[in-house]
Length: 415
Image 1 (cartoon, rainbow, N blue to C red):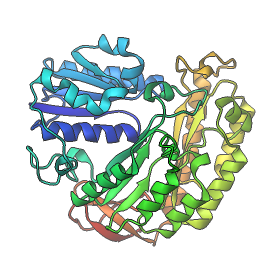
Image 2 (cartoon, rainbow, N blue to C red; image 1 turned 60 degrees about the horizontal axis):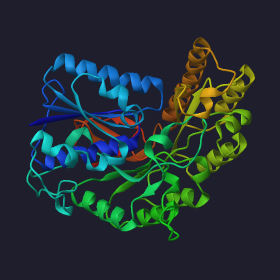
Image 3 (cartoon, one colour; image 1 turned 135 degrees about the horizontal axis):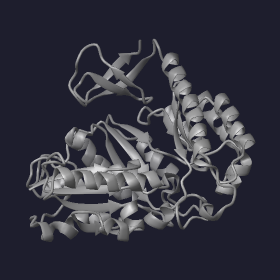
Image 4 (cartoon, helix red, strand yellow; image 1 turned 60 degrees about the vertical axis):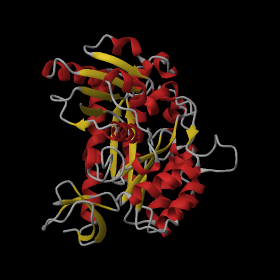
């Protein structure tokens, strides 16, 4: 049997898809393009209406090209709108986020897959188990491993539907995280991305005093030569202790992603974001002072209900001052079930698109300025793709003048 996985959305979904790939390969299923696969798993996102539409269009396109394929749909859109997903062609199974960890086990009998116990030996491809290498570096197109240590969110941002689709915050126990990291390192992974839906809340549900800083301290002191990259971290969770650990440990990548969402305090309050624009600016300034070469990305929502021209101009002005290196821009999209859906002062589509264009232009300037600032620097980098490119510790993808083996640490001089 042949499988394919298509993933939409965040790093947490990417991590979930890697686990699904591991489980399928452990049962002897072979990866193939969607046009040739017997089963395609579509791991969906629902953060915007465009994400929902993208999943629907993708499923229809797959079935047009592969009429006999069986489609398994999971993720946030499948959890939120099971009724819509069930009407799509060739969808035979829908698995909610609550049961995503058991997706392959749940569908194995219906697809005639053999059972297998996923012991430590086959977690990340140590060369053992029924298929030899379930998930070694390079399998499923990934060189770095994305490891989900937490899922769920209990924040109540007025625009966000994810707490409804992911549920309450749930953390992997520290011992399990340790074991998964050990397995991954033993399997050859040299970079591990630490991801979560609300990553900074890690440990709060455990009730034993464990917190995100506890985990980061353990990773900062890891003996094996591996780089840990912290995924998106809410500004209120990025403490000075976290910044100091990143600044002083060679195990932690000088890379932060700190979602701002808006530069006007009125809008931040309406969004129910628990910080001010000035507090965010102070945080980013502190990170830049401690780590001059760090990559610092952010998210911005344009067109939130009630966003006036003055509010938007506040965002533009703040972004031009912040020492960020890249932006992800999200046009506001009504999500049924969120408080923002019923707010007054909706911004028209043409204005949202124009504001998005202007913020993306600022983000382009940020990225260009950051790349230029790195000229002449020597950075540690991990080779990816075909060995002609690499990703630096501070998150620059560079082209190499000579090829190297994939998944190899090298020092690069950026010219």
